[in-house]
Amino acid sequence: MARVFQVQAAQVSGTAALKAAWWTLNGMAVRRLTRPGKGEPVDAKLADSPPLSRAALRRAWIEPFIKDARDVAAGLYPPSERVATPAHALARAVDFLSDARRVDRRRRRQGGGVEVRDTVEAKGYPAYYRQNFHFQSDGWFSAQSAARYEAQVEALFSGAAGGMRRRALSLLAQAWRGVDQRDLVVVDLACGSGAFLVDLKAAFPRAKVFGVDLSEAYARHAAKTSSAPVAVANAERLPFADQSLDAISCIYLFHETPPRYRLAIAREIARVLKPGGYLAFADSVQASDTPGLERLLAAFPAFFHEPFYESYQRLDIAALFAEAGLAQVAEDQAFLTKARLFAKE
Image 1 (cartoon, rainbow, N blue to C red):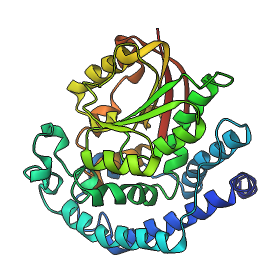
Image 2: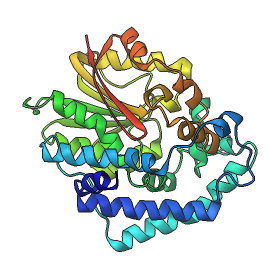
Image 3: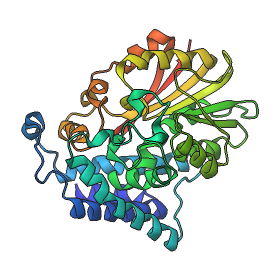
Image 4: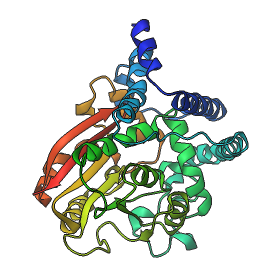
């Protein structure tokens, strides 16, 4: 088994390996600083779930790196991993680690997930959105949060976040292989801080690529990061005409959306897609997808503020989008993310 892992690891680019090592060290540092779980109650179902072996966890973790490298080698999209300058990388790490204690205090404080609810910055946003998702400082409402977000995600997943997201990019790139990109219009819905927007622009350099996010702070950061136009809009009321888009990407939105809004968003996506247009969707795996990962999936909402994650675990995603008029045509999975490609009927 060790030999298999060595062969797999050799398929990962040096840049990706360096990034993985860096963010793994950051993740280890923050866990040592905050010691999550110490002094906190653990859900009985979580405690009763059998833990995944370290070897199995390592095999699951390396899968997005391997698939990413294979897609680059196949010409589906260019290499996406970039190494920051040492000064920039160090500055991001210092900021991330200094904020980690604030995040930890918020997690341990009762009601710490709604710290931003009554702030000036959160006024006017939907009630469900005015929360400190992941217990992060400022929720979705500050430039500092937007600048810090990618570091938080990469440290959490030991550098695998980009490769997991790009499972959706892989599905879309395969569907569009050989297609003239010059008239294509692609929108990244809930684009966050803009990392996937960067990937879309690199994969489809001749297409018109836009972002949409509800947070003004994150939209500004995404536009700066990607050099793509980013609109501020609610996913249930997109600022696009009927049948005007060739594709929409939607990455990690639905597990942070209340159940009562999910079908409305799916229908809005279907409204703006052209007939034959695609939705490239990626979100958390569900327990039914990943036998053996139940403990990890249970730990996520237990130690992070994810109020809608449990309902997402029970969601029939294919059926939801089918009700909106989108048929699933492909899927892929790596580590803790499952990607699906839907086509408008």
